[in-house]
Image 1 (cartoon, one colour):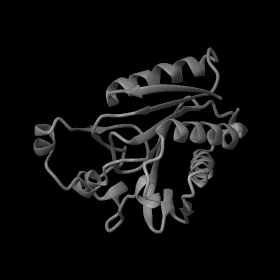
Image 2 (image 1 turned 45 degrees about the horizontal axis):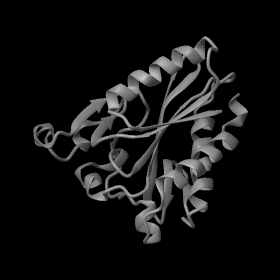
Image 3 (image 1 turned 90 degrees about the vertical axis):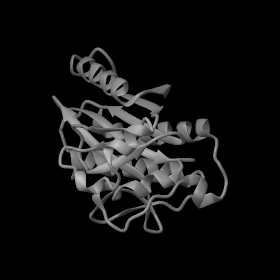
Image 4 (image 1 turned 120 degrees about the horizontal axis):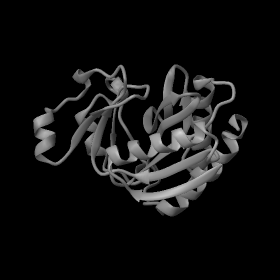
Length: 208
């Protein structure tokens, strides 16, 4: 699996880039690729996301320059912004199994977080990665012609106040956390990128 670090990319530009990679992966012109980046402030709703889980008006968000996007991934509503590592795995699945793929991403993020002494885990019946009942990473996958896109968002030094404007992933009473909040220190984003890329390469190897 190849890894590309893109820096900060607007949400729609990143989606266009994903779809271009999907088409090239379908034609087998590129290998499986993990796109790593950050987004400016944005809220995204999955295919079945409920607008009621956005707790402030779109007009109020627009006045702050924050958009709300409805997209073709699974899951409900989440937030992306500075201090958050976003990963979009473009992976050709010879035997499509989205459930297994999501579990592999969870395992990869748990592996990576262990390197920063974060005791993360999965929770039965819930998608994502959790620390003491708080969500540290969200996952939402789409698939076209057996190739995955969309992906995961890991809170590194994220301003968690932005999550208070939504029912995170449609779950009432659930809150977000970050590596910085759990450990009391701001980790180096480059080190987090390396750990996540390495863990994803190991855990997603079965899809090649």
